[in-house]
Length: 213
Ligand code: PRP
Ligand code: URA
Image (cartoon, rainbow, N blue to C red; front, side, top):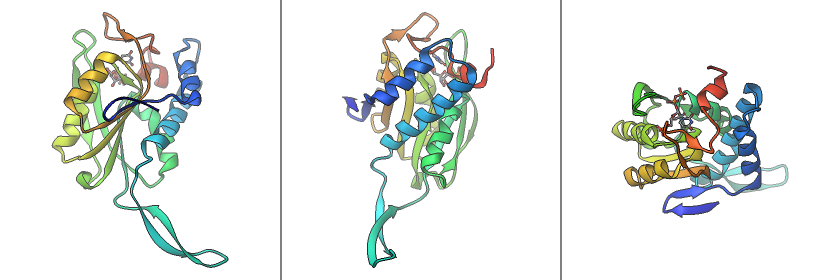
């Protein structure tokens, strides 16, 4: 993992890079696209959760009694930004099956590229949970910044944000707005185009995951 700024990391693992290449390829169909997004959720989630708190408990192995660590504290909250963030959830849930799942609905206006919120439901007590927000694309950063604003307004404190592809503009905007939030990026791309799509990017993540358009 490469540190871009304090709390901002870009993955360098060859498996992650390989899978991102599959997503970028326009000939990758919905079925494969969806499974690779899920796999990336797992690989990136595994790394992003490396600092989860643990506590030692006493257990009996078939040989003797010993102390061994388990995860401690409240169950994790995974919060996808709808729709595309949903695609990464099963991969993270495979790592932490007892996590709670919240949802934030945001869509980007096609002309202004401004985000609009249409849904928010978070597991309680949100202030006591480590929160992992997922969205494959961080473009202008508007949706990510607003989603985290919303989580903070509801009391969320310890927040991690995982995206598969980030644009420099969006990453900078997000880090400025939320320097306390750990941001994990699968790959930092070159730039945004005039329609605020990431270049080279992978197109519209939501449409490619759900087969719409
Ligand atoms: C996409 C993507 C992000 C957002 C990124 O969602 O999944 O949520 O755009 O763009 P931004 O950084 O400029 O805000 P979209 O609004 O297309 O909704 P969808 O996931 O329902 O397709
Ligand atoms: N949303 C996407 O799905 N893709 C982009 O490139 C930008 C925003």
